[in-house]
Figure 1 (tube, rainbow, N blue to C red):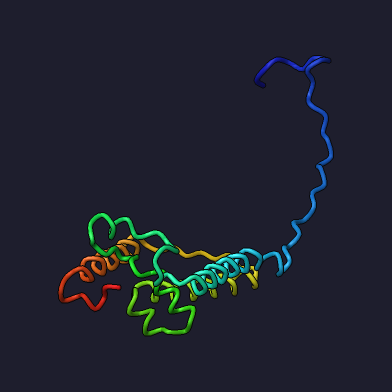
Figure 2: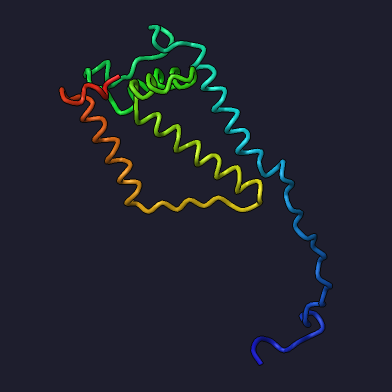
Length: 158
């Protein structure tokens, strides 16, 4: 036996009955899809704003700092014009302004749909991209940014 012998003041602790716990209440379907629905509302609002306020007219949006300081197009240059054309259903003009942005719109739409389906069915969304994929996306954006500034890649410039 370890410790001091039991005395009237330090005897074993009384055994208390366990505290009843409630079973977790499953979230309702409406509650589960609230986050994807809020994101969709935000995206629709942003596209509606860019579709209404034309980025082709100067003064409505700030100029890309890299373009202003260096004259070099970044991978995002033309993204607002692309979103404006996309909001008006002109996919060809959207691709001409920024092809990578249009591919991004499509990829994010697929991601959102997957998120909504998983949320509606009560399953968690787990996207576990390996670092090689993230580096690959970065490399594609870097190559796109370089090529659109070269003479032979002027078709990719906004």
